[in-house]
Amino acid sequence: GAGVSQSPRYKVAKRGQDVALRCDPISGHVSLFWYQQALGQGPEFLTYFQNEAQLDKSGLPSDRFFAERPEGSVSTLKIQRTQQEDSAVYLCASSSRTGEKYFGPGTRLTVT
Amino acid sequence: QQQVKQSPQSLIVQKGGISIINCAYENTAFDYFPWYQQFPGKGPALLIAIRPDVSEKKEGRFTISFNKSAKQFSLHIMDSQPGDSATYFCAASKETGANNLFFGTGTRLTVIP
Image (cartoon, rainbow over all chains, first blue to last red; front, side, top):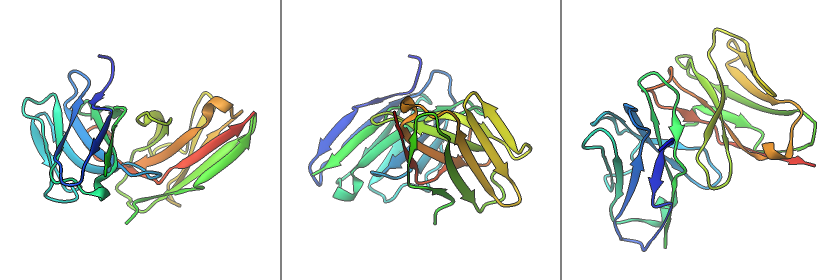
C-alpha cells in the first residue's frame, strides 16, 4: 500500500475488555510511533520502535498499555482492562531513519 | 507540561483572506518544526516544515515564519480557501526520523466562502 494503514478504524469496547489495535507501516520504514489523540487535542506520544526494538515507551499511560512489533513491520497496540479514559483516537506513524513521519488514519476507540 | 503552545484555538477567515496560527516552544534542543493538517476522520498530514537555520519557508500559499530568539514560529495561509478548513497542528522535535514529535493543541480553521 501507499500509506500507513490501521485497523480497525472504529472499536467499541465495554469497560474491562481487552483491545488490540493494528498498524501496517509504509514498507521499509524503520521507525514506528504510536500516538494517542484525545478529542480536540493534539496527538500525544505513546511509544516508539526502531525495527523490532521498542526504544521508548515513556508515553504509555499505564501498565495496561502494551505494544509490540515482533518482526519489525506490523505493530500492535494492546490495551488491557479498558477504562473510559482510554477513549481516544490511536494514531500510528512511520518514517525512515531520517525522514518525515507519515500518519495513518487512526483507530477511534470508544469505551462504554 | 505542554512543550509546544499553540494559538488561537479556533479561527474563522473569509475566503481570500490570510490565516495566521502561532506557536511557541521552550526546549532549545528542538530543531525541526513541522505543521500538520488534519481533516475529520483522517490522520495528520505533513503540510510544511522548517529548521532553525532559516527564518522563513514558503511552499505555495503556505509560509512558515520562524523566530529563533523568541522561540516562536507561525503558519500563514495566503488566499485562504474553503478547502483549507481543517485543524492545524504545529509540532517540534529534535530532528526528524527517530525522534518524537511534540504537538500543539491544534487550531480549527474555518474559511467562509
